[in-house]
Length: 211
Image 1 (cartoon, rainbow, N blue to C red):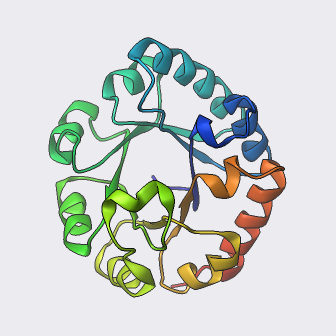
Image 2 (cartoon, rainbow, N blue to C red; image 1 turned 90 degrees about the horizontal axis):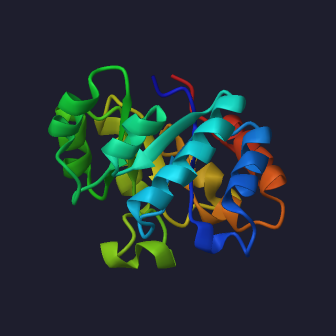
Image 3 (cartoon, helix red, strand yellow; image 1 turned 90 degrees about the vertical axis):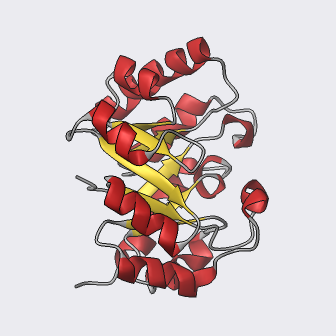
């Protein structure tokens, strides 16, 4: 069950030298209820050790932990699911490995791709990049809010806006009908991650569309 609307994605290179677990703990203390551990450059052993720390922190805050791509590490630490993309194992195969209880998130860059992920068993998708952002340049031009709205309308599963989303654009992305926002720098790069997360949660709730 996707019971969160702000999806924190980690990047320890964007924390201005602060320890990633401490930054995540600050965000969780503000009410963030989901974290994707995304540290692809770490070797498996270090990813596992960091995932164990994240599992402890997220459990203490009653928050969900998803692991990017590494199904083995997710299962080893008792995570709540995995997040995959076009270069990962196919969603349908991931679902076979995880069963029905664990979450699968998918990074989609078009409505067609998002629909395929939904058909294959994804529980939610991140969709973007909505805006220009350095971390997503390899995915080409931003998809923009109109395509985000198209995805939110077409899918029955939750759609999270991703890519260049900031507190100043929350109202615009939420007007698309999307479920929430996924972000890295908007939280982990902020001088006060706790306050940044609190303000983002308030904005998302304020501008969420009601069915």
